[in-house]
Length: 329
Image 1 (cartoon, rainbow, N blue to C red):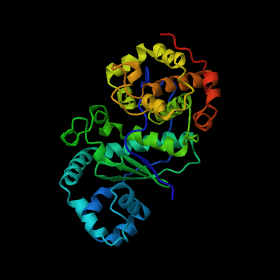
Image 2 (tube, rainbow, N blue to C red; image 1 turned 60 degrees about the vertical axis):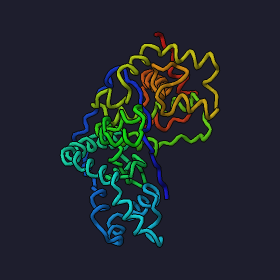
Image 3 (tube, one colour; image 1 turned 90 degrees about the vertical axis):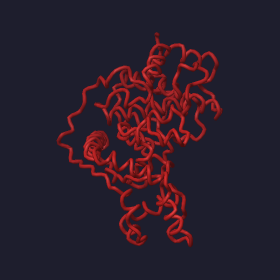
Image 4 (cartoon, helix red, strand yellow; image 1 turned 90 degrees about the horizontal axis):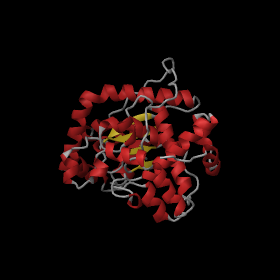
């Protein structure tokens, strides 16, 4: 069974301004997203057979892979499930998630509906997933499994949430753990699931451009989202990237890093971190992904490529060549 997990966020980067392309009119596209409150049932229903019948494989996957208590057929399953449901931190997170959704659920439904209308506009043949809300015990933020998306609401309680501080979450991670980011993170998860990076040992430039493609996909599904909500950078981080684009690019070129397939090199430039070490402590983590986004943006501008064509294009040298990327600042 296909399962894709997201421990935290797919990528974040800076967009210099709101999407300048004309936003398609999707008012007549028939999509209506209503999240399913799996989180309520997992804490209130004691009959495992009822849960399995109602949620099918999602219930099994939630137990085995998200909260890791084994399968419902295992001998200690009921005790393990009860331990999860009675954990004081888990209960506190569930209560806080419920408080948020009491006021935000209708907004979330509307925003997800709008995002998936854009998704249907660009990919009319693709099905709209069913979306479940769960409390994960601070494990996976998102899970995708055969047209199902699960959202771990305990990873979106707010960037100043005391639970995150007590559990030792780094500030650079918790700053993005807020409800306003759910929709664009769902969009990013869909992109990664539908258009995975096929090369398991990519060069840095390939990874950068791939992450740029995911960012562009997110932008097209969430064209009205504010830049801060899309990016996940602080204002200072964003200004750093804007003002040092050329210097960052030249650093990678001059140090012959673009075609490195060394895992450590790729990780330090494209994965979560308080900053990108080689670009100074004023830089954001994953700053190279922003360069990848800028390359994709110029590629789209030069070639008038559609979103579908972009996401299916796996010749990263072609994207780089046709982008004619040459930062000036």
